[in-house]
Amino acid sequence: MIEKLHFFLTAHIQLRIKYIWAAIVPMKILIAEYASALGLCGTCELEGRAMLATLASSFEKAGHEVLYPTCGPVVEAGRPILMKGEEEFEGVLDGKADAGLLIAPDGLQSHLLEILEKNTVNLGASPDAARLCADKLLCTRALAQAGVPVAEIVDRPDPVEQGCHRYVVKPRTGCGSEGVRVTSFARAGFGEIVTRYHEGLHLSASFIVGVEGFLPLTINRQLIDFQGEGMSYQGSQVPYNTPRADEIWAEARKAAVALGLSGYAGIDFVLGERPMAVDVNARPTTSIIGIARVMKEEIGELILGARFGGMAKKVTLEGVWTFRKEDL
Image 1: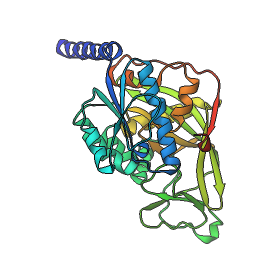
Image 2: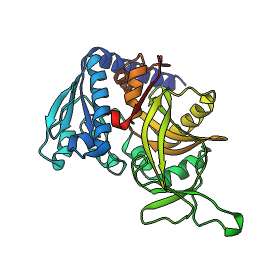
Image 3: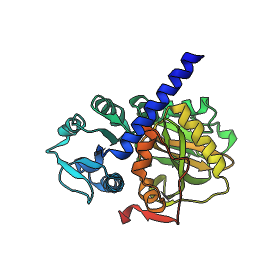
Image 4: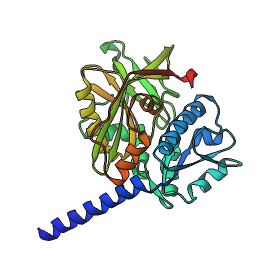
């Protein structure tokens, strides 16, 4: 018993020392945002650069030095690391920094995180957690096993005599609403999965998971455009005040534990009879742009506190900010 107490106290003291060091001593922080670094064009690049600018500004306001890779375009905060091409992105992750935060497509996230973790402190999800969340089939099964309500995986069409049903067909690995369609035909193509379609309000929960627990940030309303069978994310209202917030946060906490999340993460929900988890992002999401506008605390400091200790118990929100992708 005494040995266990000694171990706990020693670990706690070490944690506090790490936090004090991170809070007082300026750190060199690498923010590696894949889409803007490589100039992938389209809304992915615009959203990526907006997230990069938000995070870089926040870390700088807290007194830290920020580095970020780019093929040319720059943001107002931080110092750019100029790359000649895609092949140099992994080399940037090999660079010297005190801590690093990676934002990359789901299919690449785990591989790139493994490189990052060999060289510095990872401020985000572990490679294993990122790999699990990137696979929508395995992620859905893990959430269901943990008791989190999910849109059921459909293996075959429902019998005709049961009437007309609607389904969501989406890539097994993919970002946001890309390649997602709502249809009456439960047929999955190569690399796709089918889930049952549920009516409800499209929301997302943004939060931070750290060594000292779970920190809710905001519940956001997603602006979704439905055209034909397609659906596309157009922006967010941050925050969205709902009397059912406690239900949503309870499922988000449960999901975070089941998936082993750490750092900033977001979960998309469809709010009907229950909050139903439909997608998990084990990395910063576009909502972070709005969160930084309405939250008094600095998102960069919260992320550091989650990793090194001294984590905030709650955040203070002021006002509502709505943005659309074209505004970026």
